[in-house]
Structures are given as structure tokens and as C-alpha cells.
Image 1: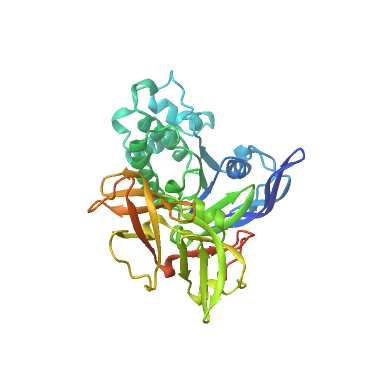
Image 2: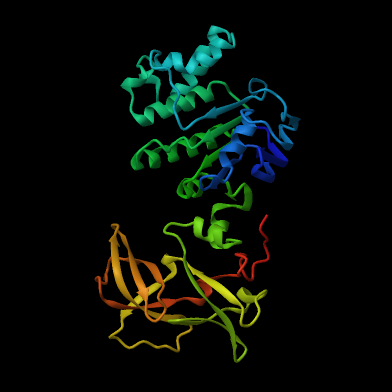
Length: 375
């Protein structure tokens, strides 16, 4: 399968720059996910690959061929949109084969491709139905099949699951991921949903304001975000943030804020200065709700200890989210806990913050102690 190469691609609409210096190689057979909020430039990047938007500057190559100025029909890519775009008066078979018929592909070859795609997507028994007779998930499969029968060099997905309910989204994520692994077709997938990004992508590109924030495997972005934006965007539920100051105490780096004092491993403070104002980040699943305030707590523990008053408990089945106001600090945090012993609203709880799990960010948003840089 071919690679897709972006060489310092830039896109402007009038005086507004929506994509800035996008420089990246999508490897052969890779499923790359572009993720970011509204206005991050992710869909514009996809449309530039497809030829639906002109590139202001830079170069796009598919299989080492410069396609920057080529019309869409000459790029050998297939795109699946958020809107299914099916013709309601045509059957599934006719929708799948329309593009091939317009290209004058021989009938025998059309039948082979339609049969193959229908078999891969579980549509063989639905070929004679019309779109109104299909569920949302089945319609999305037809839209995918329409792209597959073209046997393109590159698949492009533009938020294809956003119109589906939560159950169907989860099911279709599994199907799309499995399909891409079987076909091994180079794929660029755009979404605003970081759960989709984490579950589907071989690599993820996190975008904000048209710029790459970080590129990496899903687990690497989760464990080692290079800035506060990535830390807050990747992970469900999102990371807690607390403002504070770094101090030296007997050679030990200590993060101090109202309600919390925690020793921080030296490797996490390599680029920080004493008295520097920082942001501490800790994921809800890393917080340990161990006891109520009525119980004795060893404040000399290696983990920082804070107390809080429970304001909300979200029961989610196997785990629950406990929202609490930090005593003396005025900040609100959340902990993910098992349902073995849930606190109640109004209760005062004790929460331990494991030092090895914290992330520190400077005033510029960059992670402290990371060797990686914002791309």
C-alpha cells in the first residue's frame, strides 16, 4: 500500500490560517487518526488530500507522486463522509456499483467487487433493499462499501460515526478497525472523539488551531502528553489540573498548593526552577480514595494527601466518578473508584496522590521534565 506524505502543508482562507506547517508521513497500510476540537483543521487536511480544498503552500504526495494540484478523480482516494450520501431511489447494490458504472468498469468486474465488499461488510442479504429499509449502521456500511469497491490507494474517513447512537458507534469502531487491518489500506481517519482516536489509531495526531500538538501511539499520548492541551484532551475522564508552585525542601522537589503538598520525582522537574508557578495534572483513575477524614491518615506517606468534600457521585456500573472540592484549595477534582465502597454526597474523604503518576506543566503549557517537544 502507498504512503501519504505532507510536506509543510499550509491552508489559508483569506486572512485566516486554518492549517499551519503540517509536516507528516502516513506509513504504508497505517491507520492514522487526526483528532481535535472544532476549528482544529482536521477536516480541512482530509479535504486537501481528497482534492476538495486547494493547498495554499506545501506538497502532498501519495505513493511518492505529487498530487497537490491534481483533480480529485486522479488521486485514487476514496472518502467516507459524515453524511451517508446514499441515493434513496437506488438499491444497496446500485449504490455500491454507481461509481464503477460511471467509470465504465466491465460488468463482470463490477459484480466481483460488489460481491466482495458486500461479503466483507455483512451486506450480502441486503443488496436488493433501499436505504430507507436499512438501520443507521447498515447505511454506514453501504457508504464504506461504496468506497471499498473502488479499491483505492487511500481511504479517507471524515467523522463517519457522528450520526450514530453510542451503541452503534462502539460496534462500528470495531468493524472499521477490523476491516482496515484485513485490507491493509492506508487510511486517514478524522474525528473529534478521542475515544474513537484511542481505539482505532495506529498513531494519533492531536491538532489545535491548525497546528500539530503531538504525534504518537495512543498509549504514548496517554502516558506522556507533551503539553497541557494534549493531557486534557486525551483520556476519559479528563485529567485533573491544580495550580501551584514548585519548592525545594531538603533537596526534594515539592509541589505546593492550598490543600496539597506532594514530593515530585526529580526526573519530573528537570526543566523547572524553584518558586516557578506550575500546573499539576493527575488522572482521575490514578487518585486513591482510601479513607474518610474521620480515620487516621499517615501524612508522612510518600503519596501526597488531600481532603475533600464530595459534591457528586456518578455511578457508571463497575466504576464510579467521585467529584469533590479540595479542602482549603477551592479547586474541584474527580476520582475514578470501584463500587466496593462509595462515599456519599457531603462526606469528607481523604485522597492520596501518587507522586509517580503526576504530570507537571509550565506557564507556557509545556510538560516539565519531558524530553519530547511540541511538534
